[in-house]
Amino acid sequence: MSLDLIVKGGTLPDGRNADIGIAGGRITAIEPKIESEAGRVVDATGNLVAPPFVDPHFHMDATLSYGIPRINASGTLLEGIALWGELKPLLTHEAVRERALAYCDWAVSMGLLAIRTHVDTCDDRLLAVEALLDVKKSVAPYIDLQLVAFPQDGFYRDPTARENTIRALDMGVDVVGGIPHFERTMADGRRSVTELCEIAAERGLMVDMHCDETDDPQSRHIEQLAYETQRLGLQGRVAGSHLTSMHSMDNYYVSKLLPLIAEAEVSAIPNPLINIVIQGRHDTYPKRRGQTRVPEMLKAGIRVGFGQDCVLDPWYPLGTADMLDVAFMGLHVAQMTSPADMAQCFRMVTETNAAIMGLDHLGIEVGKTASLVVLEAGNPVEALRLRANRLCVIAKGKVVAERSSSAAKLDLPGRPKTVDRRHRLQN
Ligand code: FE2
Image (cartoon, rainbow, N blue to C red; front, side, top):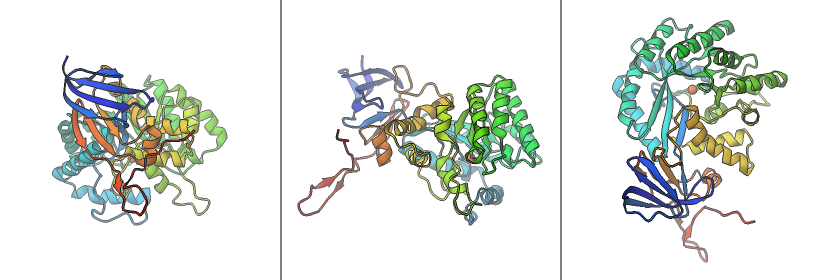
């Protein structure tokens, strides 16, 4: 049988060396040697061939808007929200679309081929919703883009948010969002979790809420989210994003909370780059890190991914669409530096994030969609250390991005002519 593409000689994340055969946009063979004819051969010898990176938490309506109309001087979440409020009336369909498409180009170049983006529904024009629905269609041949209806200014706190969030879902937005800690009272926050989960249950949708994105140890909407998930039979379809208050909660309470989250099969999506810069801003010293309890949740059997959240927007002045940056920061803040923990962090930004988004078609297995990334690294841990070059990105069976090796030429007396930062551990 003739194949469209063979990726030859790469190392898979589990350490196997294999050729990967691709035809009709699917993986048709994974074998030590594939001898068939192919339209194209990608040589991955000595490099890591991994499933694509997946970002389960992003804000594509705000991305690449850094500095418009001004920058966030305090760096806080609340000034970011106020600044986004200033920017919103200035948005146009075309500008949102162009910035989002430019970001998707970056994403593809970094092997990031599935993104869940929240889209603000607190705008009577729902202009960003329309623009991102357009973008979703445009990028469908290479990126799985999932939209979350996100009442950023509060489902109840903003006078038309409820109505507009429901309109956005009617327009085809995929996931129900929320922001309970931003409602006027703890009770309103709780009520919003209940109603939003009921809306998702009625419509058969997934839920992904910004939940307890605060340093307040009393912010406990994740408890309500786990409760509603179980009550409404939404197990496996709900995610709590950020969960930063858990960093500051009392240990005894957390020992009760984690099994409840696990039982309800609610996933957790910390966003390390953003949590480490936004949380703890009201502290002097010691200053809290504000990342949720990642190793403890993993130990409790909770599905935990890592999201990117922001790139060049009112909340974050940096970012490059690199999920290895996200995992790198996440493992530092969570102090997950054993080889097994680091390998897990790599899986979190690939396989686990895909599972959180319900994307069963991704992964390196025969029959799955042929979306892969060739990284200039020998294994997942090395990919993290190097934030490795993406040599080749394949989306749905087609090569969509390529780059050459990052080895540098050297001109030093008595030293080699090139330097390559790859490193084999010696036993
Ligand atoms: Fe977010």
